[in-house]
Image (tube, rainbow, N blue to C red):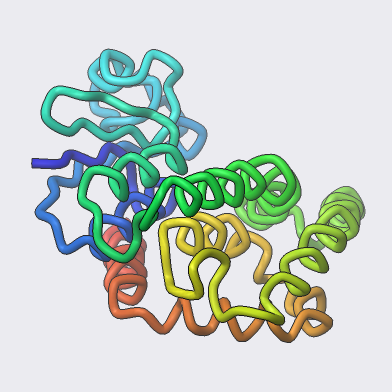
Length: 221
């Protein structure tokens, strides 16, 4: 059985969504970010990214990690590419050309989008969005996202999804990276094709199940 290490309120959400899309059984091992704890090394601290038990899984101390048939992987977007390739179906590439495109869009999400979008979500997580410093970070991040979103918007004018005109792992990976920036609603008003595409992605039952997991997790804290 697939094991996913990480809480839903982290990049692990990508792997939980993917598992839901594939309809495969999985075990969730909640590993919280150490930065959320006053003393992550305390004897009574919950399992976290500084816990010895988790460092034995991922020595980098980052979530998520997955374990599948003895294979341990620890990069969220690569984890999803692996799961798509293993389980096949419409989320995976129909041929080597599509696999190449899915890899390109996934790496593009990681290099061109996430450096900006993650700054947005961390600013809100740290409660700095109303401070001058936080506002400066948000402004810079939004400016950094303008070119990538314009590029994606142009691509989506000709197709409903980024590869093969169907929902694939590339859409999932990219939508999850972009979700970190969706608090800045004014940014997306200019990109109608991106907005419509996100709505299609987020209307999927598997995404809704993943978000329900996030809600249950938040209620339990």
